[in-house]
Amino acid sequence: MDVDIVVALISAGFSALFGTVIGHFLIVARYRKEGLSDLRSKVDEKILSAYQKLWVVMSPLAYYDLQGETLIKRNADGVFLNRQIVEQFFTDFRTFFYSEDGMLISRPMREKVFEVREFALGVMAEHPDDPGPYIKISNTKAKKIENGFDWLRKNIRRDVGLLDTQFPGKEMERLERD
Image 1: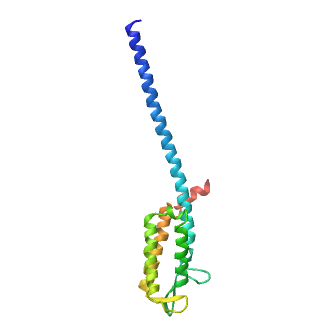
Image 2: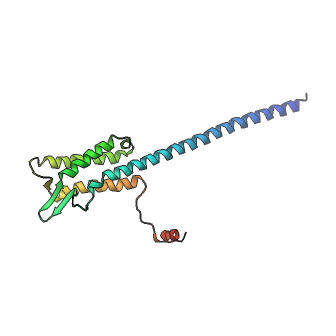
């Protein structure tokens, strides 16, 4: 056999082998990337579901309620903390926290809930003998509790990517036309 033919065959063989190996690594990398993307998508869906459930748990913290039972009540007599709503929220949050959804909540979110809990329970502990569901508190303490829960609401929306549900005017017009 001619040396040139042997060299050409060996070169072609190495080229084919090299191309096959590189192709294999590229295919493996692509499948890995697709698999990780699919996994991330599934995890994101679970996180969104967890935050939706947390949003429901937070409903007793609304500023307004049809029955008038809110966390903080303001009237001519002063500012009051509703002991029952505070206790119920933290009981419900503990149940949520130790469910399969609780582990999907961000660390800053959990830390803020625990921070507000410690403060609210501390305020309640200052008034162990107050009868009834309402504890008279200062406006400063009420604002600190409200600001903590406002932070939670705002950051739940941020964590799921909903900073603002308002559509710009031109976008709404385009959506209505389509």
